[in-house]
Amino acid sequence: MDAPVQVQMREQFALLTRRIENPETNAGDLGAAYGRMGMLLQAAEYYDAAEPSLLNARTLAPDDMRWPYYLAHLYKNVGRTDDAVTSFQRVLELRPNDVPALVELGRLYLDRGEPELAEPLFVRALSQPPRLVAVLAGLGQVALAKEDYARAVEYLEEVLALNPKASSVHSPLAMAYRGLGQRDRAAAHLEQWSNTDILVPDPLRNELDLLLQSGLSYELRGIRAFEAGDWNAAAGFFRQGLALTSGDVPLSRSLRHKLGTALFLSGDAPGALTQFEEVVRLAPASGLDEAASKAYYSIGVLMASSGRIDEAIEHFSGAVRYQPNYPEAHLGLADVLRRAGRVRESLSHYERVLALNPQTAEAEFGYTMGLVRLQRHREARERLISAMRNHPDRPQFAQALARLLAASPDDEVRDGERAMMLVQQLLQQGRNLDLGETLAMTLAELGDFVSAEATLRDVIASAERVGMTDAVRRMAVNLDLYENRRPCRTPWQDDDPVHLPGPPVDPSLIAALTASPGG
Image (cartoon, one colour):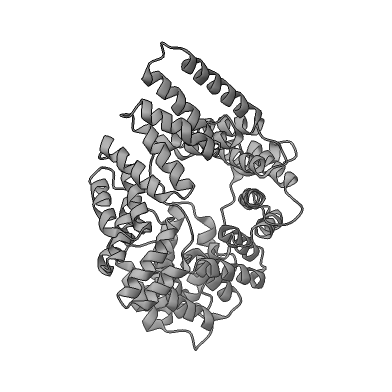
């Protein structure tokens, strides 16, 4: 054990011994001492040693729901499912509407193939505010087990609407869609599945997780502070964890990366960079390493945001080397490669993102704009048509298709009437400068140069009012074409922001990193 944990164990054992030996100790105090000893041992994963202490605590304080609750989790961890069920049932006798216990017992019943016993537990949990995704996921699983596929889809789609990162529900959702005969939707969800936990807010489990004075415990404390948006408190916990953890172990690198993230969010970019660079220095020479990958990725973001594109490419490459299935790192690398003009190299990384998660709209759009930059307009058109179907909530695909149809130099691609139909549909959703520029291109393609010129003049005037001087300069090129009764044959100029993906360059970040030692 870490030295501070050894001290905790010895102190708690000494307290327990004193209470056992003191004839005046009442049952409640002795039960609490046994319970605390069991909690420490359970937190350290000494389950065999923890069980007798927790059983004694339960016997001495039979109305305290903590002890059957911790025993239930202990039994669950060691695979004693029947004992876990019995203990959770006792918790609910003492506290009938305890949501964590309702969910945990419901999940155990589902695992045992007893959805009829799980359903009333999830229904009772759903009646307790707030509306938790774990409860909805449980009801979705119950409906699936009962072959009520429509109801399963309803619950599981709501889970994803509330928490898009709940990727573990994609598998049961795929099964539900398959049950409804919708095989395409089933296949799309199955490709997005990953084995992640859907957590339930659980103060008792939190207390157990945070009990030990160890590096891991302080990491968990920091994560809690991080989730609450208290970056300074999170940084403090991560520093305390580092003080207890050797510098050459994965936990140390994980703590240091989290510390760097907390420092960046609190406004200390140089301090963040120092922590990320130290993780990189401590990383193993080769092999998979999550903390190293994340540190390389974080440095890549900082470099891209500082306009240091070559260094960004180097660090995003390091991120995918240490974690080849890291979609955000592949996306970051693809974006900076395209930004640097290395468009062909970028395509394979966009493809890798889409292989890992086919629904990543940013990767689909980046790949398509790469095709445009390479003058592969026919391929780009087909991908945009497909993307519009797959991402009906993303108007950038329809807008890009309209512009390509209006201004491609490829006669086989241009279709002014179809472009106008798309633009009119988009205008019903709202107006923006890019859409106005696309409308002017479409009018010019249809031969209405007077309207194209007037439309673009209005767009330029709006851009001038908000100080978009680069956009005004680019649009002036097309205005000259329309004034001379010529259509546009360049959908996007090479310096258009659509060809400069990734985080925008931040002058304040450049200044902060330049002023820091070694920046």
